[in-house]
Amino acid sequence: MALGKTLTIAIMDAPYESSNSTTALRIVHAALEKGHNVNVFAYEGAVNLTMKAQQAHPNPVKGTSVEQEQHPTTKDWVGSLFKLASKKGVKLDWVNCGLCVDERGAGDWIEGPRRGGPKDLLDASSASNATLVIPTK
Amino acid sequence: MAKILNIVETAYRATIEEQDDTVLWLSHMLKNAGADISILLRANAVNYAAKGQDASGLSFGESKMTHAPEIDKDVQKMIEKGVAVYLVEEDAKDRGLADGDLIAGIKKIKRKGVPELLDQHDQVWHW
Image (tube, rainbow over all chains, first blue to last red; front, side):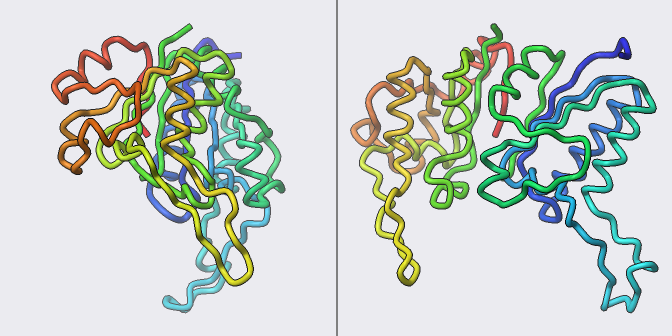
């Protein structure tokens, strides 16, 4: 375990809807890169960020194929963040809100995140140096 | 235990589908889990303190919504449970909400009093 600090981030936006998701992941990346531990509480639509069934797609406007477009998926980004955490020797604890998962049928996610609930946010926040909320507006 | 202030600004965010406000629900769950939590209603969310809300009657074809959200009652229950619920007085006035329109137990503060309220808490989560 690294000797860095611990940051908790609560996120709420569904992927591909606003820049909030990318902003949150950039913050997670920056914290991990600097050797800090990060807790993520994915609430409401944010549980879709890690869904395994996400697929890259071609771009008919540009006329590009799937291979040419290399369309990013948030599940791959999150997967890369887990790899980064492992490489840096720090902890990324990603909790998908269980009830939010159930109501969206979003239970099939990539390796790394775990199912949890509001108490996980409270516990993570209590054990962190700082907590940041990025809500849906 | 850190004192947490949840500021709710965005109102009626999927309240029909969720049958509640997701941040008020989360706050209630955190209170049940032992959190020392308070709520500040500002901007459009001050309307959550308006009593007598009725969102019932929604139906799509044969699907009828039988349990509509009752946000004012949810806020009332949290107050009864010991959660301090504050409201920005000017935001309520701007939206035509008089004192008589508000549920009992709401703590009104003036906008200029918000910094002092923030200072009374260890963590401020702005939703």
